Length: 511
Image (cartoon, rainbow, N blue to C red; front, top):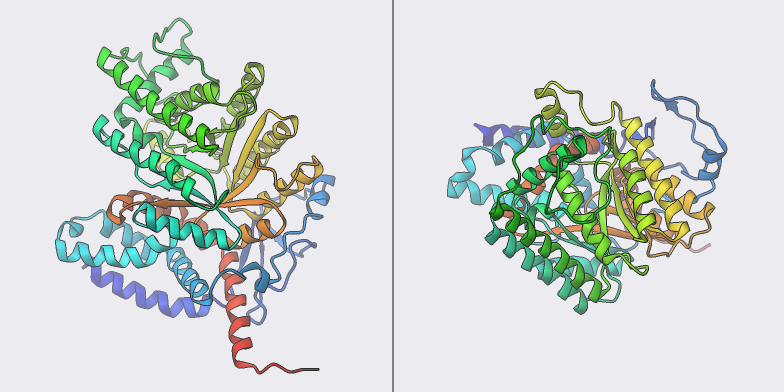
């Protein structure tokens, strides 16, 4: 039944995609503008655009806005923008993004992947093959490190760098943690064999090297310690503030039991994995990004990250980077606390700024417990928080006490940060200020920033198809709204494909 529905939806998708690829509204930040089918990208983002603002948007014409308009991120010259991308790759990217933006297909796909159908070998092989040649190839770099290296080489040839990430999640025991840890070590070793500077960062998920149940236990204890200063944690080492008074505490409603000796041992072992991985990165001069997760385990992740940062990020080293998810209402407060504490301790604070990837999960959990969502009430508030946090971190970079990875798919946030870099007199090529986007998303922004002289990387998760399914499901589930709302990349690619086809069939004329 599910497979028959999928075929019906695919036929409907094919019919609609022919009509929507040529012309659809482009969303830039919270502003929508129409684009004609004759020339889908005939506007310049460096000049004023006559638009109709959303009902919640206020007129914010300020000197800061004026300064932003001076930054030239050129999206008009598709030939230059996609010079390193083949026509076949552009068409495949358009189709994959269009399919991912068609919510009925995504919804049915998620249901099928989580159903018992995948337990049947024939059906599983068919589904895995379909996923492999669509969403997997679009969002992931390969099934193993060798395939990921080939993807990285293609990026490097196009002027972009790669963030290598073994895309597995949620280890359950020490054995699986050790296996994942060894794979992360391979990433660091492999970078020595790749073109210099082609890998900007290695990436690690603490949930892959630390038993998830213990992360929850440690997070509960840290939350209770924040609420009760007399609650002593004997295993705790020096760290930076990881919780604020505005943080969500509903996960821990009663005083938790202290760790058992066995749990303390596992905590020590897990912390050592992160420390040793960070030391290996320090030896290789390869910065390390520690991914953020859901709020139930994030305090423990921040504790481990910040305590490791205190050990490693000394004497100007910018190796260990934590992650701040700015869709949380407490994000700015936690960021300010961390920057102030790091400066006092003489620690180089490295952070990656993202909006967040667990919106549905966070809101549903809070609602089920009778609490308001920890997420900002509107996307405009999240955009504002992201831009404020980016501005704070860029000030710290200018001061020499911080390093930041600006992970964003939002054009306005990219332009605002680029403007701030210039206004502070920072070098665009500085290793302490880098932009990043997911593989398969916001390619137009990636190339525009690269062409403007900034350091830009693509996030490259890799791993066996069946084992990376949780990552793909999360990408599909949390980003379907984003992909359906923002057609900007598809418009850019559509215009460039049209230009190339016209050039191929139209004989050149000498004047």
